[in-house]
Length: 606
Image 1 (cartoon, rainbow, N blue to C red):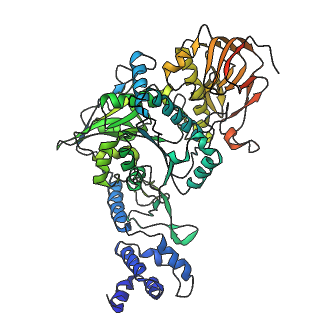
Image 2: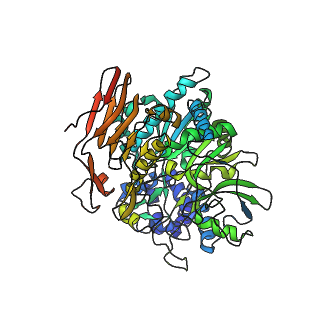
Image 3: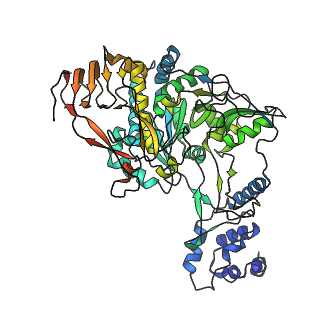
Protein backbone atom coordinates (compact mmCIF):
# COMPACT_ATOMS: atom_id res chain seq x y z
CA UNK A 1 0.00 0.00 0.00
CA UNK A 2 1.56 3.31 -1.06
CA UNK A 3 1.91 6.20 1.36
CA UNK A 4 -1.02 8.22 0.00
CA UNK A 5 -3.40 5.28 0.37
CA UNK A 6 -2.10 4.65 3.89
CA UNK A 7 -2.61 8.30 4.77
CA UNK A 8 -6.16 8.30 3.36
CA UNK A 9 -7.04 5.24 5.45
CA UNK A 10 -6.05 7.09 8.62
CA UNK A 11 -7.98 10.25 7.78
CA UNK A 12 -10.62 9.29 10.36
CA UNK A 13 -7.95 9.69 13.05
CA UNK A 14 -6.13 12.95 12.20
CA UNK A 15 -3.92 12.93 15.31
CA UNK A 16 -2.67 9.45 14.43
CA UNK A 17 -2.41 10.34 10.74
CA UNK A 18 -0.01 13.17 11.49
CA UNK A 19 2.22 10.78 13.46
CA UNK A 20 2.51 7.99 10.88
CA UNK A 21 6.04 9.10 10.01
CA UNK A 22 7.42 8.02 13.41
CA UNK A 23 5.85 4.55 13.27
CA UNK A 24 7.34 1.35 11.89
CA UNK A 25 5.44 -0.71 9.28
CA UNK A 26 4.37 -3.18 11.97
CA UNK A 27 3.13 -0.38 14.20
CA UNK A 28 1.17 1.13 11.31
CA UNK A 29 -0.42 -2.28 10.71
CA UNK A 30 -1.43 -2.55 14.37
CA UNK A 31 -2.87 0.97 14.27
CA UNK A 32 -4.86 -0.05 11.16
CA UNK A 33 -6.31 -3.05 13.05
CA UNK A 34 -7.38 -0.73 15.88
CA UNK A 35 -9.14 1.67 13.52
CA UNK A 36 -10.86 -1.17 11.69
CA UNK A 37 -12.22 -2.32 15.05
CA UNK A 38 -13.60 1.03 16.21
CA UNK A 39 -10.72 2.18 18.40
CA UNK A 40 -9.93 5.62 16.94
CA UNK A 41 -10.59 7.21 20.35
CA UNK A 42 -7.24 5.85 21.56
CA UNK A 43 -5.42 8.46 19.46
CA UNK A 44 -7.59 11.56 20.01
CA UNK A 45 -5.15 13.06 22.52
CA UNK A 46 -1.96 12.45 20.52
CA UNK A 47 0.05 15.67 20.02
CA UNK A 48 2.02 16.53 16.89
CA UNK A 49 5.22 14.58 15.99
CA UNK A 50 8.16 15.46 18.18
CA UNK A 51 6.05 15.60 21.35
CA UNK A 52 5.88 12.45 23.54
CA UNK A 53 7.18 10.31 20.64
CA UNK A 54 8.74 7.81 23.05
CA UNK A 55 5.38 7.31 24.80
CA UNK A 56 3.60 6.91 21.44
CA UNK A 57 5.99 4.14 20.40
CA UNK A 58 5.66 2.41 23.79
CA UNK A 59 1.87 2.36 23.26
CA UNK A 60 2.34 -0.27 20.55
CA UNK A 61 4.59 -2.48 22.68
CA UNK A 62 1.60 -3.65 24.72
CA UNK A 63 -0.53 -4.53 21.66
CA UNK A 64 -1.02 -8.06 20.37
CA UNK A 65 -1.94 -9.27 16.90
CA UNK A 66 -4.75 -11.21 18.62
CA UNK A 67 -6.42 -7.95 19.63
CA UNK A 68 -8.86 -7.99 16.68
CA UNK A 69 -10.28 -11.37 17.74
CA UNK A 70 -10.51 -10.17 21.35
CA UNK A 71 -12.48 -7.05 20.35
CA UNK A 72 -14.76 -9.08 18.04
CA UNK A 73 -15.58 -11.55 20.84
CA UNK A 74 -16.07 -8.67 23.29
CA UNK A 75 -18.59 -6.96 21.01
CA UNK A 76 -20.60 -10.19 20.67
CA UNK A 77 -20.58 -10.94 24.40
CA UNK A 78 -21.41 -7.36 25.39
CA UNK A 79 -24.34 -7.34 22.96
CA UNK A 80 -25.61 -10.61 24.49
CA UNK A 81 -25.17 -9.21 27.99
CA UNK A 82 -27.11 -6.04 27.19
CA UNK A 83 -30.17 -7.95 25.94
CA UNK A 84 -29.88 -10.48 28.78
CA UNK A 85 -29.27 -13.49 26.53
CA UNK A 86 -29.36 -16.75 28.44
CA UNK A 87 -26.07 -18.64 27.89
CA UNK A 88 -27.92 -21.88 28.59
CA UNK A 89 -30.74 -21.31 26.10
CA UNK A 90 -31.85 -24.68 24.73
CA UNK A 91 -30.28 -26.66 27.59
CA UNK A 92 -32.20 -28.66 30.20
CA UNK A 93 -30.59 -29.22 33.63
CA UNK A 94 -30.43 -32.52 35.48
CA UNK A 95 -28.45 -33.94 38.40
CA UNK A 96 -25.15 -35.49 37.24
CA UNK A 97 -23.70 -38.69 38.66
CA UNK A 98 -20.92 -38.51 41.20
CA UNK A 99 -19.60 -39.88 44.48
CA UNK A 100 -20.76 -38.74 47.92
CA UNK A 101 -18.20 -39.52 50.61
CA UNK A 102 -18.75 -39.69 54.36
CA UNK A 103 -15.65 -38.90 56.40
CA UNK A 104 -14.24 -41.80 58.36
CA UNK A 105 -16.37 -44.64 57.01
CA UNK A 106 -14.92 -47.73 55.30
CA UNK A 107 -15.41 -46.37 51.77
CA UNK A 108 -13.76 -43.06 52.66
CA UNK A 109 -10.75 -44.81 54.17
CA UNK A 110 -10.38 -47.05 51.10
CA UNK A 111 -10.61 -44.04 48.76
CA UNK A 112 -7.92 -42.23 50.76
CA UNK A 113 -5.59 -45.22 50.51
CA UNK A 114 -6.21 -45.51 46.77
CA UNK A 115 -5.55 -41.80 46.38
CA UNK A 116 -2.24 -42.03 48.23
CA UNK A 117 -1.17 -44.83 45.87
CA UNK A 118 -2.05 -42.62 42.88
CA UNK A 119 -0.40 -39.46 44.23
CA UNK A 120 3.07 -40.20 42.83
CA UNK A 121 1.45 -40.14 39.36
CA UNK A 122 -0.01 -36.68 39.90
CA UNK A 123 1.02 -33.09 39.22
CA UNK A 124 -0.39 -30.26 41.34
CA UNK A 125 -1.31 -26.87 39.89
CA UNK A 126 -1.96 -23.90 42.19
CA UNK A 127 -3.87 -21.05 40.58
CA UNK A 128 -2.56 -17.92 42.31
CA UNK A 129 -2.77 -15.28 39.60
CA UNK A 130 -5.27 -12.46 39.54
CA UNK A 131 -4.75 -9.16 41.31
CA UNK A 132 -3.02 -10.68 44.30
CA UNK A 133 -5.75 -9.95 46.85
CA UNK A 134 -5.41 -13.45 48.33
CA UNK A 135 -1.73 -14.01 48.82
CA UNK A 136 -0.46 -17.47 49.57
CA UNK A 137 2.05 -15.78 51.89
CA UNK A 138 -0.68 -15.16 54.49
CA UNK A 139 -0.68 -17.46 57.54
CA UNK A 140 -3.13 -20.31 57.14
CA UNK A 141 -3.44 -20.27 60.92
CA UNK A 142 -1.67 -18.25 63.61
CA UNK A 143 -0.98 -21.02 66.15
CA UNK A 144 2.13 -21.96 64.16
CA UNK A 145 2.15 -19.10 61.62
CA UNK A 146 2.43 -21.56 58.73
CA UNK A 147 1.50 -19.77 55.50
CA UNK A 148 -0.78 -21.25 52.86
CA UNK A 149 2.04 -21.94 50.40
CA UNK A 150 4.13 -23.74 53.03
CA UNK A 151 1.14 -25.89 53.99
CA UNK A 152 0.47 -26.80 50.36
CA UNK A 153 4.09 -27.78 49.72
CA UNK A 154 4.35 -29.78 52.96
CA UNK A 155 1.10 -31.56 52.06
CA UNK A 156 2.39 -32.47 48.60
CA UNK A 157 5.66 -33.73 50.09
CA UNK A 158 3.76 -35.80 52.68
CA UNK A 159 1.66 -37.33 49.89
CA UNK A 160 4.80 -37.95 47.85
CA UNK A 161 6.48 -39.81 50.69
CA UNK A 162 3.35 -41.82 51.56
CA UNK A 163 2.88 -42.72 47.90
CA UNK A 164 6.47 -43.92 47.57
CA UNK A 165 5.92 -46.36 50.45
CA UNK A 166 3.00 -48.08 48.72
CA UNK A 167 3.99 -47.69 45.05
CA UNK A 168 3.50 -51.04 43.33
CA UNK A 169 6.10 -50.17 40.68
CA UNK A 170 8.67 -49.05 43.24
CA UNK A 171 8.44 -45.53 41.80
CA UNK A 172 10.17 -42.69 43.61
CA UNK A 173 8.82 -39.92 41.36
CA UNK A 174 8.91 -36.36 42.60
CA UNK A 175 5.51 -34.71 42.35
CA UNK A 176 5.62 -31.60 40.11
CA UNK A 177 4.15 -28.42 41.60
CA UNK A 178 3.07 -25.65 39.23
CA UNK A 179 2.03 -22.17 40.37
CA UNK A 180 0.19 -19.86 38.01
CA UNK A 181 1.07 -16.29 38.91
CA UNK A 182 0.35 -12.85 37.47
CA UNK A 183 2.27 -9.59 37.24
CA UNK A 184 0.88 -8.78 40.68
CA UNK A 185 1.93 -12.03 42.39
CA UNK A 186 4.88 -13.41 40.40
CA UNK A 187 7.87 -11.73 42.05
CA UNK A 188 6.43 -12.04 45.56
CA UNK A 189 5.75 -15.75 45.07
CA UNK A 190 9.26 -16.26 43.71
CA UNK A 191 10.78 -14.43 46.65
CA UNK A 192 8.65 -16.33 49.17
CA UNK A 193 9.85 -19.64 47.75
CA UNK A 194 13.52 -18.70 47.49
CA UNK A 195 13.77 -17.06 50.90
CA UNK A 196 12.27 -20.17 52.52
CA UNK A 197 14.29 -22.75 50.55
CA UNK A 198 11.08 -23.78 48.77
CA UNK A 199 9.71 -25.01 52.12
CA UNK A 200 11.60 -28.27 51.76
CA UNK A 201 10.67 -29.05 48.16
CA UNK A 202 13.38 -29.40 45.53
CA UNK A 203 13.48 -26.25 43.36
CA UNK A 204 13.40 -28.49 40.27
CA UNK A 205 9.90 -29.67 41.29
CA UNK A 206 8.46 -26.15 41.20
CA UNK A 207 7.52 -24.24 38.04
CA UNK A 208 5.98 -20.78 37.90
CA UNK A 209 3.80 -19.91 34.89
CA UNK A 210 2.82 -16.25 34.61
CA UNK A 211 -0.49 -15.24 33.06
CA UNK A 212 -0.76 -12.01 31.09
CA UNK A 213 -3.48 -9.44 31.51
CA UNK A 214 -6.07 -8.44 28.91
CA UNK A 215 -7.40 -5.12 27.70
CA UNK A 216 -10.24 -3.43 29.57
CA UNK A 217 -13.41 -2.34 27.83
CA UNK A 218 -15.08 1.03 28.40
CA UNK A 219 -18.51 0.53 26.87
CA UNK A 220 -20.92 -1.71 24.97
CA UNK A 221 -19.05 -0.99 21.72
CA UNK A 222 -15.96 -2.68 23.22
CA UNK A 223 -13.91 0.50 23.04
CA UNK A 224 -10.62 -0.19 24.81
CA UNK A 225 -10.07 1.70 28.07
CA UNK A 226 -7.02 3.88 28.56
CA UNK A 227 -5.16 3.74 31.85
CA UNK A 228 -6.46 6.62 34.02
CA UNK A 229 -2.85 7.43 34.98
CA UNK A 230 -1.23 7.08 31.54
CA UNK A 231 -3.03 8.01 28.33
CA UNK A 232 -0.46 6.09 26.27
CA UNK A 233 -1.26 2.84 27.99
CA UNK A 234 -4.30 0.56 27.65
CA UNK A 235 -5.81 -0.39 30.99
CA UNK A 236 -5.51 -4.12 31.69
CA UNK A 237 -6.87 -6.62 34.19
CA UNK A 238 -6.39 -10.37 34.76
CA UNK A 239 -8.13 -12.66 32.28
CA UNK A 240 -9.23 -15.17 34.93
CA UNK A 241 -7.88 -18.51 36.13
CA UNK A 242 -9.01 -20.26 32.93
CA UNK A 243 -5.66 -19.13 31.46
CA UNK A 244 -3.99 -21.96 33.36
CA UNK A 245 -4.96 -24.43 30.62
CA UNK A 246 -3.33 -22.51 27.75
CA UNK A 247 -0.26 -21.81 29.88
CA UNK A 248 0.17 -25.51 30.64
CA UNK A 249 -0.34 -26.41 27.01
CA UNK A 250 2.26 -23.94 25.72
CA UNK A 251 4.77 -24.79 28.50
CA UNK A 252 5.48 -28.30 27.17
CA UNK A 253 5.06 -29.72 30.68
CA UNK A 254 2.20 -32.03 29.72
CA UNK A 255 4.41 -34.01 27.35
CA UNK A 256 7.14 -34.28 29.99
CA UNK A 257 4.63 -35.55 32.54
CA UNK A 258 3.23 -38.16 30.17
CA UNK A 259 6.77 -39.35 29.35
CA UNK A 260 7.47 -39.61 33.10
CA UNK A 261 4.41 -41.85 33.61
CA UNK A 262 2.13 -39.29 35.26
CA UNK A 263 -1.62 -39.79 35.04
CA UNK A 264 -3.35 -36.96 36.92
CA UNK A 265 -3.36 -33.16 37.10
CA UNK A 266 -4.90 -31.56 40.20
CA UNK A 267 -5.93 -27.89 40.08
CA UNK A 268 -6.61 -25.89 43.23
CA UNK A 269 -7.05 -22.26 44.23
CA UNK A 270 -4.98 -20.20 46.57
CA UNK A 271 -6.56 -19.87 50.00
CA UNK A 272 -8.70 -22.87 50.92
CA UNK A 273 -6.84 -24.08 53.99
CA UNK A 274 -8.79 -27.36 54.22
CA UNK A 275 -8.33 -28.53 50.64
CA UNK A 276 -5.72 -31.22 51.26
CA UNK A 277 -8.08 -32.97 53.67
CA UNK A 278 -10.10 -33.80 50.54
CA UNK A 279 -7.36 -34.52 47.99
CA UNK A 280 -6.42 -38.16 48.80
CA UNK A 281 -9.98 -39.52 48.81
CA UNK A 282 -10.98 -37.48 45.73
CA UNK A 283 -7.98 -38.77 43.82
CA UNK A 284 -9.01 -42.28 44.90
CA UNK A 285 -12.48 -41.64 43.43
CA UNK A 286 -10.96 -40.45 40.13
CA UNK A 287 -8.90 -43.63 39.87
CA UNK A 288 -11.74 -45.93 40.91
CA UNK A 289 -14.40 -44.33 38.67
CA UNK A 290 -11.89 -43.62 35.89
CA UNK A 291 -13.10 -40.03 35.67
CA UNK A 292 -11.57 -37.82 32.99
CA UNK A 293 -12.78 -34.83 35.03
CA UNK A 294 -13.58 -34.92 38.75
CA UNK A 295 -14.90 -31.72 40.35
CA UNK A 296 -14.51 -31.50 44.12
CA UNK A 297 -17.76 -30.38 45.69
CA UNK A 298 -19.54 -29.83 48.99
CA UNK A 299 -23.20 -30.15 50.00
CA UNK A 300 -25.03 -27.00 48.95
CA UNK A 301 -28.19 -25.42 50.29
CA UNK A 302 -30.71 -24.39 47.63
CA UNK A 303 -30.04 -20.83 46.37
CA UNK A 304 -26.80 -20.65 48.39
CA UNK A 305 -24.27 -18.29 46.78
CA UNK A 306 -22.07 -21.03 45.36
CA UNK A 307 -22.24 -22.54 41.87
CA UNK A 308 -23.94 -25.91 41.40
CA UNK A 309 -22.47 -28.81 39.42
CA UNK A 310 -25.09 -29.58 36.81
CA UNK A 311 -25.62 -31.82 33.80
CA UNK A 312 -26.90 -29.77 30.86
CA UNK A 313 -28.50 -31.49 27.87
CA UNK A 314 -29.26 -29.49 24.73
CA UNK A 315 -32.26 -30.04 22.49
CA UNK A 316 -29.81 -31.11 19.75
CA UNK A 317 -28.43 -33.91 21.94
CA UNK A 318 -25.26 -32.23 23.20
CA UNK A 319 -24.57 -32.60 26.92
CA UNK A 320 -21.99 -31.44 29.43
CA UNK A 321 -21.39 -31.51 33.17
CA UNK A 322 -20.28 -28.09 34.37
CA UNK A 323 -20.57 -25.50 37.09
CA UNK A 324 -23.65 -23.27 36.77
CA UNK A 325 -23.50 -20.09 38.84
CA UNK A 326 -26.10 -19.94 41.61
CA UNK A 327 -27.87 -16.89 40.16
CA UNK A 328 -28.30 -18.75 36.83
CA UNK A 329 -29.26 -22.18 38.22
CA UNK A 330 -32.60 -21.24 39.79
CA UNK A 331 -34.05 -19.46 36.70
CA UNK A 332 -32.68 -22.23 34.48
CA UNK A 333 -34.55 -24.86 36.52
CA UNK A 334 -37.78 -22.80 36.54
CA UNK A 335 -37.59 -22.44 32.76
CA UNK A 336 -37.07 -26.20 32.34
CA UNK A 337 -40.15 -27.66 34.00
CA UNK A 338 -39.11 -27.29 37.66
CA UNK A 339 -41.64 -24.69 38.92
CA UNK A 340 -40.02 -24.40 42.36
CA UNK A 341 -36.54 -23.89 40.91
CA UNK A 342 -33.53 -24.69 43.07
CA UNK A 343 -34.94 -26.39 46.21
CA UNK A 344 -33.56 -28.72 48.84
CA UNK A 345 -34.31 -32.43 48.47
CA UNK A 346 -34.94 -35.00 51.24
CA UNK A 347 -31.30 -34.71 52.40
CA UNK A 348 -31.87 -31.07 53.37
CA UNK A 349 -29.52 -29.96 50.58
CA UNK A 350 -29.88 -29.07 46.90
CA UNK A 351 -29.38 -32.11 44.64
CA UNK A 352 -26.88 -29.95 42.73
CA UNK A 353 -23.64 -30.08 44.75
CA UNK A 354 -21.64 -26.91 45.43
CA UNK A 355 -18.62 -26.40 43.20
CA UNK A 356 -15.43 -25.40 45.07
CA UNK A 357 -13.25 -24.90 41.96
CA UNK A 358 -10.85 -27.77 42.56
CA UNK A 359 -10.44 -30.16 39.63
CA UNK A 360 -8.76 -33.52 39.06
CA UNK A 361 -8.14 -34.25 35.36
CA UNK A 362 -6.80 -37.42 33.78
CA UNK A 363 -3.64 -36.30 32.00
CA UNK A 364 -3.92 -38.28 28.73
CA UNK A 365 -7.42 -37.13 27.70
CA UNK A 366 -6.60 -33.63 29.00
CA UNK A 367 -3.62 -33.30 26.67
CA UNK A 368 -5.65 -34.64 23.73
CA UNK A 369 -8.34 -32.03 24.34
CA UNK A 370 -5.82 -29.19 24.63
CA UNK A 371 -4.28 -30.21 21.32
CA UNK A 372 -7.66 -29.38 19.76
CA UNK A 373 -8.29 -26.14 21.64
CA UNK A 374 -4.80 -24.89 22.51
CA UNK A 375 -6.12 -24.56 26.04
CA UNK A 376 -8.50 -21.73 25.11
CA UNK A 377 -11.50 -21.56 27.44
CA UNK A 378 -14.81 -20.02 26.41
CA UNK A 379 -14.84 -16.40 27.58
CA UNK A 380 -17.59 -14.41 29.26
CA UNK A 381 -18.11 -10.78 30.25
CA UNK A 382 -19.62 -9.46 33.46
CA UNK A 383 -20.04 -5.67 33.19
CA UNK A 384 -21.33 -3.70 36.16
CA UNK A 385 -23.93 -1.39 34.62
CA UNK A 386 -24.73 2.05 36.04
CA UNK A 387 -28.47 1.46 35.74
CA UNK A 388 -31.17 -0.72 34.20
CA UNK A 389 -30.74 0.83 30.74
CA UNK A 390 -27.41 -1.05 30.48
CA UNK A 391 -25.96 1.75 28.37
CA UNK A 392 -22.90 2.53 30.49
CA UNK A 393 -20.62 0.81 33.01
CA UNK A 394 -19.75 1.80 36.57
CA UNK A 395 -16.14 0.96 35.70
CA UNK A 396 -14.31 -0.73 32.85
CA UNK A 397 -14.83 -4.45 32.32
CA UNK A 398 -12.92 -7.17 30.45
CA UNK A 399 -13.33 -10.65 29.05
CA UNK A 400 -12.70 -13.44 31.53
CA UNK A 401 -12.42 -17.22 31.50
CA UNK A 402 -12.74 -19.78 34.29
CA UNK A 403 -10.68 -22.88 34.95
CA UNK A 404 -13.78 -24.96 35.74
CA UNK A 405 -15.32 -24.27 32.30
CA UNK A 406 -12.84 -26.69 30.73
CA UNK A 407 -15.49 -29.47 30.38
CA UNK A 408 -17.62 -27.29 28.08
CA UNK A 409 -15.71 -28.44 25.00
CA UNK A 410 -15.50 -32.14 25.93
CA UNK A 411 -17.23 -34.81 23.81
CA UNK A 412 -20.26 -36.67 25.27
CA UNK A 413 -18.05 -39.75 25.76
CA UNK A 414 -15.93 -37.93 28.38
CA UNK A 415 -16.37 -39.30 31.89
CA UNK A 416 -17.16 -36.20 33.96
CA UNK A 417 -18.19 -36.58 37.61
CA UNK A 418 -17.83 -35.08 41.05
CA UNK A 419 -16.83 -35.97 44.59
CA UNK A 420 -18.83 -34.48 47.46
CA UNK A 421 -17.28 -34.08 50.91
CA UNK A 422 -18.48 -32.45 54.11
CA UNK A 423 -17.95 -28.69 54.15
CA UNK A 424 -16.31 -28.84 57.59
CA UNK A 425 -13.64 -31.14 56.15
CA UNK A 426 -12.93 -29.65 52.74
CA UNK A 427 -13.95 -26.03 52.24
CA UNK A 428 -13.11 -22.83 54.09
CA UNK A 429 -11.87 -20.23 51.58
CA UNK A 430 -10.41 -16.91 52.67
CA UNK A 431 -11.68 -14.33 50.21
CA UNK A 432 -13.68 -11.66 52.10
CA UNK A 433 -12.17 -8.78 54.04
CA UNK A 434 -13.42 -8.20 57.61
CA UNK A 435 -15.75 -5.36 56.64
CA UNK A 436 -17.50 -7.39 53.93
CA UNK A 437 -17.58 -10.54 56.08
CA UNK A 438 -19.30 -8.68 58.94
CA UNK A 439 -22.15 -7.77 56.52
CA UNK A 440 -22.83 -11.41 55.59
CA UNK A 441 -26.33 -12.45 56.77
CA UNK A 442 -26.28 -14.61 59.89
CA UNK A 443 -26.08 -18.29 59.05
CA UNK A 444 -24.23 -17.76 55.75
CA UNK A 445 -20.50 -18.52 55.49
CA UNK A 446 -18.16 -15.59 56.15
CA UNK A 447 -15.28 -16.87 54.00
CA UNK A 448 -12.87 -14.59 55.87
CA UNK A 449 -9.48 -15.00 57.53
CA UNK A 450 -11.36 -15.33 60.83
CA UNK A 451 -13.72 -18.09 59.70
CA UNK A 452 -10.96 -19.77 57.69
CA UNK A 453 -8.69 -20.18 60.71
CA UNK A 454 -11.54 -21.29 62.98
CA UNK A 455 -12.56 -23.87 60.35
CA UNK A 456 -9.09 -25.44 60.52
CA UNK A 457 -9.39 -25.90 64.30
CA UNK A 458 -12.91 -27.26 63.91
CA UNK A 459 -11.85 -29.77 61.24
CA UNK A 460 -8.86 -30.98 63.25
CA UNK A 461 -10.98 -31.27 66.40
CA UNK A 462 -13.66 -33.28 64.59
CA UNK A 463 -11.04 -35.54 62.98
CA UNK A 464 -9.57 -36.30 66.40
CA UNK A 465 -13.08 -36.87 67.77
CA UNK A 466 -13.62 -39.44 64.99
CA UNK A 467 -10.31 -41.03 66.00
CA UNK A 468 -11.59 -41.48 69.55
CA UNK A 469 -10.31 -38.37 71.34
CA UNK A 470 -12.75 -36.61 73.67
CA UNK A 471 -12.52 -33.04 72.37
CA UNK A 472 -14.57 -30.52 74.31
CA UNK A 473 -17.29 -28.74 72.34
CA UNK A 474 -16.66 -25.17 71.10
CA UNK A 475 -17.81 -21.85 72.48
CA UNK A 476 -19.29 -19.08 70.35
CA UNK A 477 -17.41 -15.82 70.09
CA UNK A 478 -17.73 -12.65 68.01
CA UNK A 479 -14.51 -11.71 66.22
CA UNK A 480 -14.37 -8.82 63.73
CA UNK A 481 -18.17 -8.72 63.83
CA UNK A 482 -18.47 -12.41 62.91
CA UNK A 483 -19.97 -15.00 65.24
CA UNK A 484 -17.79 -18.12 65.02
CA UNK A 485 -17.33 -21.40 66.87
CA UNK A 486 -14.02 -21.49 68.73
CA UNK A 487 -12.75 -25.05 69.07
CA UNK A 488 -9.49 -26.07 70.75
CA UNK A 489 -6.64 -24.67 68.66
CA UNK A 490 -5.38 -28.00 67.32
CA UNK A 491 -3.01 -28.16 64.37
CA UNK A 492 -0.47 -30.60 62.98
CA UNK A 493 2.01 -30.92 60.17
CA UNK A 494 0.85 -32.95 57.14
CA UNK A 495 3.67 -35.44 57.73
CA UNK A 496 2.08 -36.32 61.11
CA UNK A 497 -1.30 -37.23 59.63
CA UNK A 498 -2.13 -36.94 55.94
CA UNK A 499 -4.99 -39.46 55.91
CA UNK A 500 -7.45 -40.61 58.56
CA UNK A 501 -6.14 -44.18 58.88
CA UNK A 502 -2.67 -42.80 59.70
CA UNK A 503 -4.08 -40.45 62.35
CA UNK A 504 -6.00 -43.30 63.98
CA UNK A 505 -2.75 -45.26 64.44
CA UNK A 506 -1.23 -42.32 66.35
CA UNK A 507 -4.05 -41.97 68.88
CA UNK A 508 -4.86 -44.59 71.50
CA UNK A 509 -6.31 -44.97 74.99
CA UNK A 510 -8.51 -42.40 76.68
CA UNK A 511 -7.51 -38.94 75.47
CA UNK A 512 -9.12 -35.60 76.26
CA UNK A 513 -8.56 -32.04 75.07
CA UNK A 514 -10.30 -29.08 76.74
CA UNK A 515 -11.84 -26.25 74.74
CA UNK A 516 -9.30 -23.69 76.00
CA UNK A 517 -6.38 -25.85 74.87
CA UNK A 518 -3.83 -25.31 72.12
CA UNK A 519 -1.95 -28.24 70.61
CA UNK A 520 0.57 -28.04 67.76
CA UNK A 521 2.18 -31.29 66.60
CA UNK A 522 5.20 -30.44 64.46
CA UNK A 523 7.01 -33.80 64.48
CA UNK A 524 6.32 -36.90 62.40
CA UNK A 525 6.26 -39.73 64.94
CA UNK A 526 4.29 -38.25 67.83
CA UNK A 527 1.93 -40.73 69.49
CA UNK A 528 -0.95 -39.56 71.71
CA UNK A 529 -1.63 -42.11 74.46
CA UNK A 530 -4.01 -41.49 77.39
CA UNK A 531 -3.36 -37.77 77.15
CA UNK A 532 -5.42 -35.22 79.08
CA UNK A 533 -4.54 -31.75 77.79
CA UNK A 534 -5.77 -28.58 79.48
CA UNK A 535 -3.50 -25.78 78.31
CA UNK A 536 -0.95 -25.26 75.54
CA UNK A 537 1.34 -27.96 74.15
CA UNK A 538 3.85 -27.53 71.30
CA UNK A 539 5.79 -30.68 70.32
CA UNK A 540 8.48 -30.87 67.66
CA UNK A 541 10.88 -33.70 66.93
CA UNK A 542 13.28 -35.02 64.32
CA UNK A 543 11.91 -37.73 62.05
CA UNK A 544 13.85 -40.52 63.81
CA UNK A 545 12.46 -39.67 67.25
CA UNK A 546 9.35 -41.44 68.54
CA UNK A 547 7.55 -39.23 71.05
CA UNK A 548 4.85 -40.63 73.34
CA UNK A 549 2.50 -37.97 74.78
CA UNK A 550 0.44 -39.00 77.79
CA UNK A 551 -0.84 -38.21 81.25
CA UNK A 552 -2.16 -34.88 82.47
CA UNK A 553 -0.61 -31.80 80.88
CA UNK A 554 -2.10 -28.65 82.37
CA UNK A 555 -0.92 -25.03 82.29
CA UNK A 556 -2.35 -21.53 81.90
CA UNK A 557 -2.18 -21.92 78.13
CA UNK A 558 -2.80 -19.31 75.45
CA UNK A 559 -5.65 -16.86 75.65
CA UNK A 560 -7.36 -15.16 72.71
CA UNK A 561 -7.44 -11.38 72.75
CA UNK A 562 -9.82 -9.44 70.50
CA UNK A 563 -8.25 -7.15 67.91
CA UNK A 564 -10.07 -4.49 65.90
CA UNK A 565 -9.40 -4.85 62.17
CA UNK A 566 -9.21 -1.04 61.94
CA UNK A 567 -6.31 -0.92 64.44
CA UNK A 568 -3.36 -0.23 62.12
CA UNK A 569 -0.87 -0.60 65.00
CA UNK A 570 -1.45 -4.37 64.66
CA UNK A 571 0.05 -6.26 61.67
CA UNK A 572 -2.52 -6.76 58.91
CA UNK A 573 -2.20 -10.56 58.94
CA UNK A 574 -3.38 -10.48 62.59
CA UNK A 575 -6.03 -7.76 62.52
CA UNK A 576 -7.89 -9.34 59.56
CA UNK A 577 -8.61 -12.26 61.96
CA UNK A 578 -9.97 -10.18 64.82
CA UNK A 579 -7.85 -11.88 67.48
CA UNK A 580 -4.33 -12.67 68.56
CA UNK A 581 -2.88 -15.16 71.00
CA UNK A 582 -1.50 -14.12 74.36
CA UNK A 583 0.97 -16.93 75.03
CA UNK A 584 0.67 -16.97 78.81
CA UNK A 585 2.13 -20.42 79.42
CA UNK A 586 2.85 -23.53 77.40
CA UNK A 587 4.72 -26.79 77.47
CA UNK A 588 7.04 -26.63 74.47
CA UNK A 589 9.42 -29.46 73.66
CA UNK A 590 11.73 -29.98 70.70
CA UNK A 591 13.51 -33.34 70.46
CA UNK A 592 16.58 -33.26 68.24
CA UNK A 593 17.90 -36.76 68.92
CA UNK A 594 16.54 -40.06 67.60
CA UNK A 595 15.04 -42.67 69.89
CA UNK A 596 11.92 -43.21 72.02
CA UNK A 597 10.90 -40.37 74.29
CA UNK A 598 8.02 -40.27 76.78
CA UNK A 599 6.32 -37.00 77.66
CA UNK A 600 4.08 -38.02 80.55
CA UNK A 601 2.64 -36.34 83.66
CA UNK A 602 4.90 -33.36 83.29
CA UNK A 603 5.00 -30.67 86.00
CA UNK A 604 3.84 -27.13 85.21
CA UNK A 605 6.52 -25.30 83.30
CA UNK A 606 6.60 -21.55 82.93
